[in-house]
Every structure is written in structure tokens, then in C-alpha cells.
Amino acid sequence: MNKAKLPGIAAIEQQTAWDFLTGLQRSSFGYFLHEVSQLTGLVRDKTRPDWPASIAATGMALTAYPVGVERGWMERAHALKRTLTTLRFLAASTQGIGADATGYKGFYYHFLDMDSGKRVWNCELSSIDTALLMAGVLTAASYFRGDTDDEAQVRSLANQLYRRVDWDWMRNGSDLLCHGWKPENGFLPWHWEGYDEALILYVLALGSPTYPVAPACYAAWLRSYEWRCIYGIELVYAGSLFIHQMSHVWIDFRGIRDSFMRAHGSDYHENSRRATLVQQQYAIRNPLNFDEYGEFCWGFTASDGPGNVHRKIGGIERKFYDYIARGAPYGPDDGTLAPWAVVASLPFAPEIVLPTTYAYGRRRLHMANPYGFKAAFCPTFGGDDAVCERAGWVSPYHFGINVGPIVMMIENYRSDLIWRLMRQCPVFVDGLRVAGFEGGWL
Image 1 (cartoon, one colour):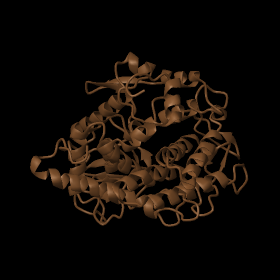
Image 2 (image 1 turned 90 degrees about the vertical axis):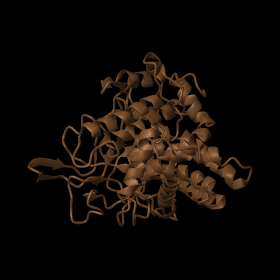
Image 3 (image 1 turned 180 degrees about the horizontal axis):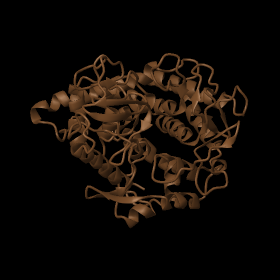
Image 4 (image 1 turned 120 degrees about the horizontal axis):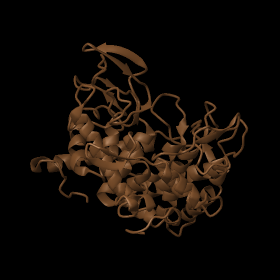
């Protein structure tokens, strides 16, 4: 779709809009070039000094490298070297419960020291973040298909890493997968239920040739869904926009349906489109009267925020939050918006995403930032450090799991690159079929 007419953009601005979109994608890709350890290949969670790596951001880096190669922003040899550094570290690092461990039973701890790879902050062994890491691992195996020894090793290591994840253990006896586990006190008390970002987790767990979960596990998850009608739009509800995007970074859900979607005459791609429309409609209605909300100013998702404080603004007592999963239309909502979440909906609803992204560009939220848009901004909060009068508070950071979807979803919109690679990945194909998906490219 590269250089096709951009919907929602005036004809006279078409080339300028394409140039902006390309520049945003390239600058966002820069995060994965620079916020990485040369020793381990692990990728920093966010651009705060001395901050640790995130395994989810590392999975996104492994997925972004093929985009960089295909766009001419990274040499293939460089991408291959980076990928091997990461995979070799993951394969050789300690799996156990000791202080030197990076993971256990094939899963990885959520946050790791950048250069040693050791667990930090007593964080959890994360099921969803391991799934996002494995999605990147499998993307690398799907992209590096050459007959050289190094590319063959990518495929071998990827297979080894995926096969040793004990997905069934992560159920802890339940029909639903658990959020995680800690060596100090065992499994976390929460399981993945209700429509959420765990769609890709269940697909990967169902497709495992070594430690799969049973189809009944997926069926139990489907039973926890909530179908709603909001502003006359029917959909499987989840308030935060990232939920409707994260699994779609890798899986092309266009035209393929599981039993739930067959019963409702929809698919997950269409559902994400509807969720995107709901977000815009909520901003237009603006029931809480926050500054700047409107047709070209929306994007409610898990994001950074001004902090856990109360302020009286314009005669209204407002409560603001730090990092939290914001959502629409039922909140929480503190006036904080995430431009990256809008961009990540590009393949679903380009006619409203493109003009909104372009409008955000005019707000200068990407200016003087090395990796494109900052994570979030809050026009209502204000502050002396605002980059422009209509931006208010602006996050000082970039996050790996924010810039990753920008890079990949722009590319999926332009060329289907990641979707094409993963449509050929046996793990994803098997997992989707076990989950009961039919139709379309399957």
C-alpha cells in the first residue's frame, strides 16, 4: 500500500503525509537500534537512565529488525548479528529460581538487567510478556530463511526457545492461563479472562508441540468475553486500545474466525476497527470535559501519566494517574492521551487514524524526540515544561512497547510484512486451528 492514496488526508497534503508517516516509522525504529545491550541483545523498557530491559520490548525488537532491513534502515548482516546475540543469550541464560536466573520453565522474568540479564525488582515470571518475546523469536525464524549457518542457527535457537516454554504449567490447574509466577510465593492470583491482550498468548500455548494447553482452555477464555453495544457499535469490549492491537502486530485476523466471532458475524480485525471508532466517538462526546478531546485528538490506552495527584482545574477537582490502563468509554480517564496507540490502529481504521496521526504531528509531539512521539501527553494537566501550549504535560520517556507497535503496524498497513511472515509460521497456524479458527487465509 506504499504511496497509495491516504484516506482522510487532503489531496494537496498527500506527499507530506506520506513523508511524515515514513519519518515517524523510521524514528520509532531507532529505539531498537540504540536502546539495546551489545552484550545480551536485550532492549531497554523505557528511556530512563539505568532502567532495565523488558522482555516484551526485546520481542518487539526481534520483530522490528526485518522491517528495518526491508526499509533500508539496517543492513541484513547487522540485523542477523543482533538477532543471534539475543537468541544465543536467551538460550544460554540461567533457567531457575536463583538470583542469577533470567527465567524458569521456558518463561522469562518481566524485567532483566540490561547487561547481565538477571531478574530485577523481584518481578514476576510473566506469561504475556514471554508470549510477546516468543512472537519476536518466531518472527526472526520466519524471516531468516537463508541456507547460511548463521540463519540456520536463528531457526534452530528459535525452535529451542519456543519448545521449552511450559505453557501448561502456567495454568496452575485452572482452565485459564495465569498472569505469572514468583519464586518467593508461587503463582500470581490472577488468570487471563475477559477479552484482553492474551489472545496471542493462548494461540502460542495451543500451538506448542511440547507443553500445549488443551482446547478447553481457549473455550474457557471465550466464555469470559463481554459483547456490548456502545454508541450503536457492537463489539467484544475492552476499554484500553492496546488490547485491540497487541496480538494483531503478529497475527492477521482478517477474515478468520473462532467460534465466538462466527456466532457474532465478525472477526477480531473488524472488532479492533470498531473499538477504534468507539475511542474517537468517546473523545468527540468528551463527557468529562477534558481539554482538546475531539475528532482528531483521542487514544486511550495503557500509558504513562502525569502522576498520582489531585488538582483543581477550571473549577473541577481532577484526579490524575501515573502509569495505568486508561480506557474508553468507561475509563479510567484523566485527560491523558497516547498518540502511539492511535498509530497502532492504522490497519483497522486508516480513515480516522491517519488524519489524527497527522494532527498529532502538527502538535509537535515528535519534535526534538529521538524516537518519534513521546509516550503520552495530558493537555488538561498543563505544566511549565509543555512542548507547546496545547500539549500540557508530556511524558519525558519513550517506551519500547509503545514504539514497537508504531513500527510494525505502519508496516503491516503498508506491506503486510509481519502478517505475511507469520501466516507462514507453523506455530501460529497450528495454534489458530486448535483454537477453532477457520476461513480467510487459513
